[in-house]
Image (cartoon, rainbow, N blue to C red; front, top):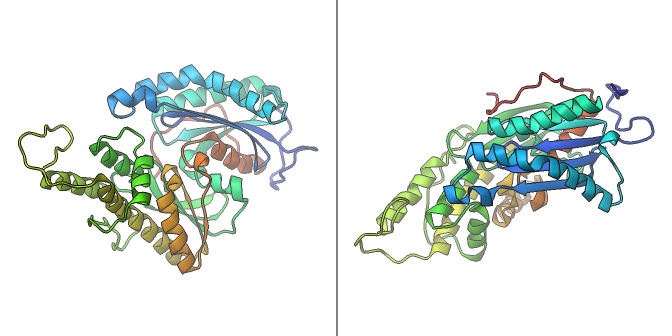
Length: 365
């Protein structure tokens, strides 16, 4: 195996910064990135499967796995080509390590990425680094903004997870709040679907929230004033179902029938709904910041691309005297760039895995 860096964490191996290939196939996006050092992103190629699952109204796990298998090798080639277009002539032989998300997500999808990563690590005789996909999300901020000063509170609002993380240094973090049922992004997607919008529903709801005032209707803010930092969004989704029923509108799976409907405007309804989501996310995050005495928070995950959510966080953090970090939209949704950034820190620290690395569908408690 190639000579490895010392445990001192130096970011330079010999006379150059280490080059890593990162892979993420945790859900329905296949993503490959090339990262040099901690922050130089040479390539980040992601293929979404939304169109492949549209007819089913949600992601079909076996179909997702097969699609990952179909496209992952062409995406590795595409990442190398993208790096070359940017002036970085690199090949697989130039890699110092390969990183892969091994939890959490759809197990079949995870195993596709892991199998490819293990094969490359073995054939190229380089270290393999397993990455927690949720831990990686905040590192999209590190990739763009550099190292914020610890300690930090991270909100990760991804499609399948809503978690609050308290981090005191690299590799030292714990989940201090999580959704006990539906994640925020999942709730937004499902409510958008009630209005006939395809996945992903977040961009549609965000546009409505930006274009309309939110005061015409009032939806609940689940667990906002509770004593802990956990989230619950299934009740908000149910409240929307009751709202549609009370206005005589068909709920999913129902026909309109002969009911007399009360006219409503979609925009103000969705704006009011999203105000409930943002109030809970912002409120809980700032409560965590106060509880743990941090001076900076980060927001990441697919929902972090929302312009409305960013506006709300910017106003609240400015009032609270907190620094706020969030990545560009293309690094909010699942991507291998954030995986590669976290992997670079692990590589410098000599935190490697071997070929016995396993995949897990769930986050550890």
